[in-house]
Image (tube, rainbow, N blue to C red):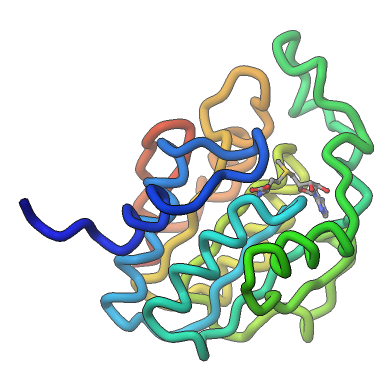
Amino acid sequence: MGKLKTYKQLIRNYPILSDQMTKKRLDIILRQLEQILIKNIPGSIVEFGCYIGTTSVFLKRLINQHDPSISFHVYDSFKGLPHKSIKDASVAGSGFRSGELKASKRQLLKTFKKSQLKPPIIHKGWFNELKDKDIPSEIAYAFLDGDFYSSISDSLELVWPRLVTGGNIVIDDFGKSNLPGVSRAVEDFFKDRPAKIRHEQDLAIITKP
Ligand SMILES: C[S@@+](CC[C@H](N)C(=O)[O-])C[C@H]1O[C@@H](n2cnc3c(N)ncnc32)[C@H](O)[C@@H]1O
């Protein structure tokens, strides 16, 4: 039997720390990152909407396996979800309310400490209030998990101009009826921008041509 790929070993060996991630989605998120790392695509790794770090610790472990010097930035309001807009309206998603999914920076640091990992570079604030200096000038891979229309649009506005050729963006909750703002934000953003967009397991995978 062949050797398991590094990202598959990580999913097999470590627990998923909250209900915000599943093995199936993590498999895709990490497979996309591993491809970027194997190809030596230059640039930082970023996650918009890190919460307690459920996915962040796996991203960090995979980075460490390839090149621990690659910078890893995470972003969150640490105040939970913002207000919904009309683009997020859905009966199925009535449970997602402003202030939900609130985690503190301390909780995130605790997750990394418990996992015996060096913490990422942490940026606290609403995505639309971040400054230019908060975002790395070159991004190789981004995981966007902000749930709402404005959160996905704002993070795309920040990431897309800095994403290097061949770099990837993976967006959670794409095509889900309870979070319709995610797909709408992706459709609106890429209406006039050339990009290769694929859909796999509630995730959009977008490559910069
Ligand atoms: C679904 S959770 C993220 C789950 C996380 N990726 C994980 O694996 O545990 C969404 C997170 O995005 C943050 N968030 C959503 N919209 C935001 C915005 N516009 N600005 C800053 N943070 C935001 C929330 O605070 C919340 O922690």
